[in-house]
Length: 96
Image 1 (tube, rainbow, N blue to C red):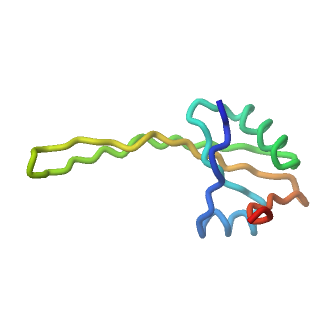
Image 2 (image 1 turned 60 degrees about the vertical axis):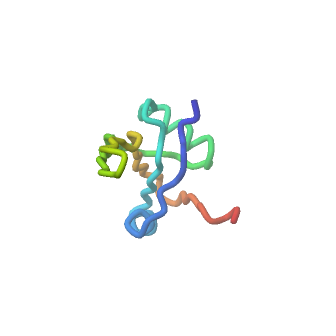
Image 3 (image 1 turned 30 degrees about the vertical axis):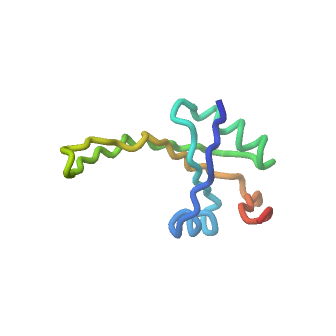
């Protein structure tokens, strides 16, 4: 089970990382805060002070087509907001 899926790179998340040393990641739905902390410390070589998680349920959608009504949904996701120690940074753009 891979815990980190990808970093969230939006305007809000980027501003938060520049001002408050706080980074946002999309993580596995079954991962807990301890596993997230260990994975980020091992992957990026930083010390994590705090981890906050948010669970998002699936979005359900209904479409009306010629063949009838189609029901569908997106997958459930989980975001983790990680506070990194003062002086440590994570550079997402270094390997582009």
